[in-house]
Amino acid sequence: MEPFFKVYIASWSAACLVALVLLLRNPAAIAICRLGYWHFLAEPWKLATFAACAWLFSASWSYDIYLVWRNGDYPLTWYSNLFASSVIYLAAGLFWNLEWQRGRGVIFSFMREGWPSRPAESAFLRLAGYATIFALPAIAAVLVFLLDKK
Image (cartoon, rainbow, N blue to C red):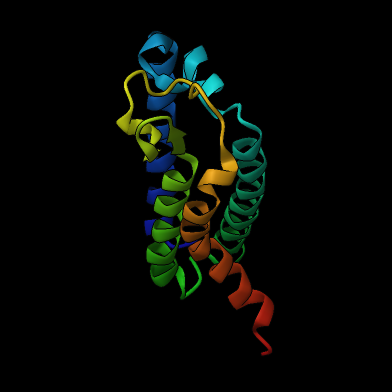
């Protein structure tokens, strides 16, 4: 493995340890440690899509780390994948923050007072068209691999 990647992996690991220490020192300061955050995510449609995306992410990450250890460097496509995955992650974040609010219509949850708490009403059918727009980047990425006939 090239020295750069050894330093990169060591730095990344150190950053993860620092984040863990900060989390353990004051868990209440981190939204993911609050009960309200988990209630926010507990809508069935969010759980189902999160599970699918977590699977895809973990499979991708596992493969990338395998290639780093096997070949000593990332695949040549890492740079373009960085931009493609950034678009997918942004779209996923917006997708999971969609909600319908009486009197306002479809909004992003982070625009509402009390976020990240669960919305007062769950109305996925009213969100379906908007959800499709934000799901398209991920769907397109999967289709590219499924339809590739190399």
